[in-house]
Picture 1 (cartoon, one colour):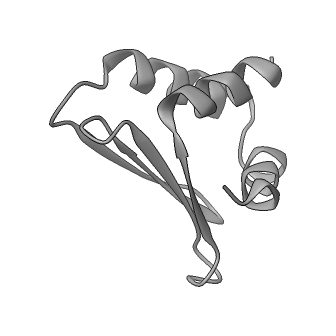
Picture 2 (tube, one colour; picture 1 turned 180 degrees about the vertical axis):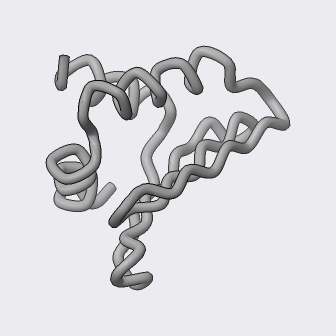
Length: 80
């Protein structure tokens, strides 16, 4: 996991609305479900089958990272 990309995503994109949106999606995600979200700078793909979350920098496609759904929940909880 590239922590700098995760931190940038939360600093730039993750206001209260986005945080609630992500938490709601995580509560609904299940096997076979994929959700793709596009924000101003980052794209986020939540994969229920793999239990992973890909965060990609829209402005620099070479910058991306993958974290688990549980890691995303932890980070979201820390940004209350």
